[in-house]
Image 1 (cartoon, rainbow, N blue to C red):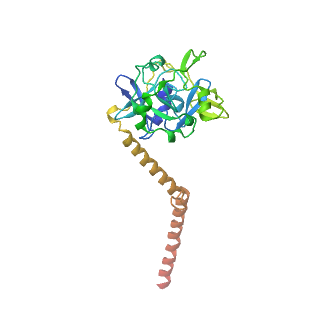
Image 2 (cartoon, rainbow, N blue to C red):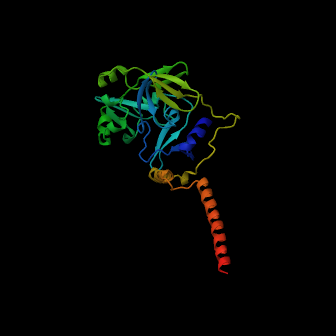
Image 3 (cartoon, helix red, strand yellow):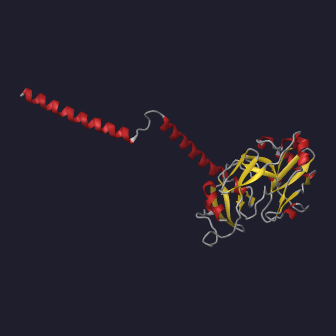
Length: 295
């Protein structure tokens, strides 16, 4: 777990959350939604895989689970099992939909009729739009969710990863998506990264997939180096208001530094001081010389 605590700290806050322990609250914007914001779906050998544009996407969309709090927004609970994504899929006529799989819910339970998720946490798109890189622009209006869910069924396709002795939710069938999109789909291969991160390049997804344990290198129980008090965490709109103002200030500082003559370098300041001293010395003898001649 230590790799999560260390690598995700710059991008959010770790807090000690009741019933979960250490959870991570990302600084990703007031409108952030996991498996929706700043990313898209790609098909890999393991099924439909979420490719995120966030630097921390290799971790929070492939390990652990997401949950929601009405005040704090979305937060991530780390876990040690890798997957192409941790979502539940549904199909309803011309629509595909998905929602984050809740903490503590197994794949078998998520496939059951008794599994429930808040309607607003579902995301639906037209089948033909499932592979769009800007998929967030094609979400169906939330007012339609209840009707779509009522007429939908859970997609129970899975993939057995014998190398890791794991089973993943694979999502929609490739042939069905090909018919809906009118295009042939070639699965993207997955290559192991040795360092934290991920990159999609030339039909290959290079991604960091470490084996996770609950202790650090010194055999101590893993923990974040800094834990925020839950009472001090602001709601998403306030957290990101501060971040936006910081970014604006930073951009203004950068602009001022780029303007000629707006910020003087130490060399320029030293040259000016030398000129001032030289001027003072040159002026003093002249005035004294005039006084002597007048006398």
